[in-house]
Image (tube, rainbow over all chains, first blue to last red; front, side, top):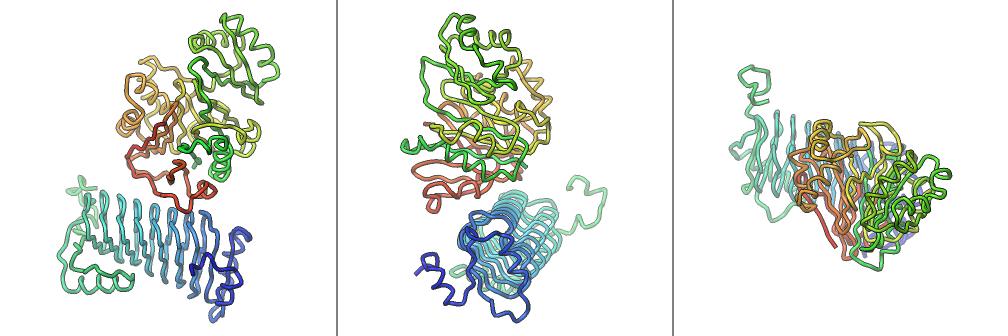
Length: 243
Length: 298
């Protein structure tokens, strides 16, 4: 039986704490999540009727699971530090912004700048992500089952961005040390981003990420790797045209 | 910020609810722009009649007796239906220019919001809730409509600075974003005979589309032109007598979500605006691509 057809009482018997956003405010939800302390028994949460609300489950810093039943607006699961958050719908701009650790799974699509500035953890988008996915990422791993939009991984510093579909224009513009793996077509590469050789250690790393993201039927060898040519790290007047 | 919405009905059974649905969508985005709000609704149209939506800051003074005076001035029957600060004047299509001219003399303080066979435009300073209540938008019937709630950046918070902007018969536009080359484009359009009511950047975008369509382009082609000729940030939602279009600039940092079912095509700045539409859980929901024109026609 899909969870959405279960009654509240039935779900609570399964020990998930159910929070219905058509009955309670977003602030009540986030405050309840922020009050969690290490060792709390309230380890499973379910959020109903998010209806595109902003900032659902931001700033959670305990290793709980949170299932959001429906689509969310801006900044869902931002700053996540240890929780396993699943959105059973699509996410608006800035999902998982500045994640520290834990995981976020979006069953649908994600809008702009998914995983922006993320420092750690795993963000999985089972649909498509739009523009600026992984912008300024700093250690997060992002796996997108579909396509990503333009200017993704702009100024990406570290971490891994894995795309099973295609990437839009200017991928990895001004990239530092993040690794980008794209299985489909790349519309264009940004300044200082180049295709690189897939060595055995990259295949191994990528296979590990695909496994962690629950991707099956796709081989690491089907991807191309992109990264920094390292020519724009320091300003050099001869490179002025590349900026 | 600003919030914009649009709704294009495919299912005639929903037409009596257009005003209510569009109002709900707009009110849900109130926190994207508290300065002013507006809505354009395409209702029943007749080839024998043109509607002119007018506005006055002093409606009790300006609207009283206006139908009789205007009919006398243009030598044709005129009806007037007042709703708060706005009124819809109905007259013969070939008398519209004469009516516009006569209005300037008869009621110099009255502003024209727009004109056409189908469109009615209502916009005022204030929150969406207050604006849709004031003009009884929820009770309105129609085939399609667009709405806007404004957080002003490029020009003053006034009734005339509110969206939608209408610069051609049955044409109107709402905009989230800001244009940087609007002064130059305005000058070029003035040279080509277009007239402007405000210093607002969005009015330039509306006039640009009207101008291109006056030069024989269809809505889709006119929207395509914005991508090369307008500089700045924009998500536009546009209405014509029987059409509805959407375009985002190539950077596409202004948010946009669309939904389509057998019954309608809907646009919202955010998904929040769409959550109460019928059948939304099974609708095709997507983010419109940058630099890509979408349009539908009845």
